[in-house]
Length: 260
Ligand SMILES: NC(=O)c1ccc[n+]([C@@H]2O[C@H](COP(=O)([O-])OP(=O)(O)OC[C@H]3O[C@@H](n4cnc5c(N)ncnc54)[C@H](O)[C@@H]3O)[C@@H](O)[C@H]2O)c1
Image 1 (tube, protein in one colour):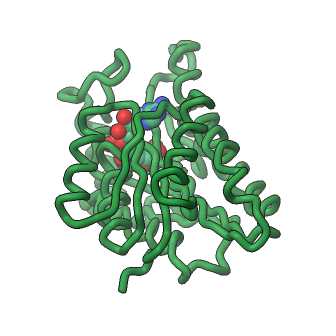
Image 2 (cartoon, rainbow, N blue to C red):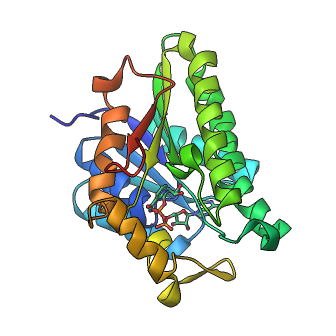
């Protein structure tokens, strides 16, 4: 028996990294997963992997910054699998620069993707979650940087701190519908976002990643070992499962001591 048998889960930013690992794990635990991303090709590939492993999956290309896309995403889940029980707001992006050099575009893309994107998804899911006795689980991906700040990440840290306030508000507003809403604050997970910037991928016109020297000092903070996406997915599963029925409005720090 899987821990998510009979549940329908929407996961954003699921073409790669942590979101992909969440989707694979959720499907393995019996959930029907609706995976979503702005990147169609790796998204479809992820869907194929889940289906090949025997999972129930549908995919939907959606840009979380666009309310019409997030409406379509939540509707797709209900059309394909009949309900919506779990929402993981995982899509994210970095655009690092020192404060005095940060452009409006760099500021806007982080706030729009992380903070507004999470709000868009939750508002689009409202008509399915806000039903008496329906219940549900929302997990928002924050970061330790939202709790402690970080040089070069004023946009990202503000967006991630915003996620925490947003999480607590949803927890309060939707408690009477049996919906829990929690955040996860990751420290350092090996993904495209945290690879070496010097050899990093160009995403939406800019290189992502962390400069080699900064990366090395971050690794020291976590005892030399960053998490794999698969390891990072396990606490998401916990918050999405009935083991976490009485946990809401909480920020789960999953950072190997980077923040405490
Ligand atoms: N990797 C870490 O160490 C770390 C630490 C703290 C928090 N996080 C957070 O974890 C989440 C997942 O990041 P990751 O490390 O797996 O990075 P990633 O780059 O591997 O995955 C992020 C995914 O989000 C998608 N995405 C970006 N903008 C989008 C949009 N507008 N609409 C839909 N999808 C969009 C990307 O296409 C990508 O597939 C992010 O919210 C990130 O901020 C990561």
